[in-house]
Length: 217
Image 1 (cartoon, rainbow, N blue to C red):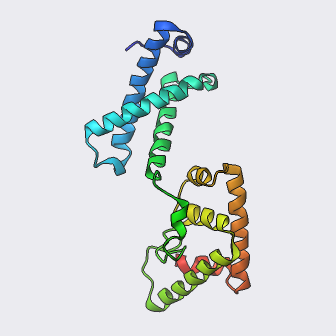
Image 2: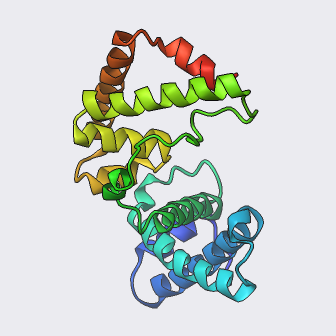
């Protein structure tokens, strides 16, 4: 594999013919090594995969990353080694792809299919310490009222977006894609939904501090 300076990487990748082809293949191999290291050392959720499977995954991701870097050569400022900069981008490509794979079968339609929108086991609300019987009953009652507020105070679009992002912890880009919107519009949708939910709970005499305190103790 040819060693290159930053300037040589940029020149070779911007050239044509065999020079560019060789530079692209050298870059892809370097990125594959970096991605494989990330997948095997940093992602415990992939520990069930064999080395062959991880290597194949790294190979596929390295091709996507190589194209991404080729499209963004003008953004390289020379503050680090070109290969270091490229590997960072490759790892971000891997993270994004893995996140999308995790939610590939996710559908906002499923959020309202099984009854309650806000299950009692919502990870974003409940504290790790089991509550006593009285506190558990109080929590169940508040969760029921929150669930009712989600249904009554919000539009269906606001409700689905808020539950997906806050309760299900679905990445914003996935929710935005399923709602056929962009991140900025989704931010606005979530802001309005939170404001309306807060107003609905306060109308019932439930302050945000009380709700948070109830579930974080």
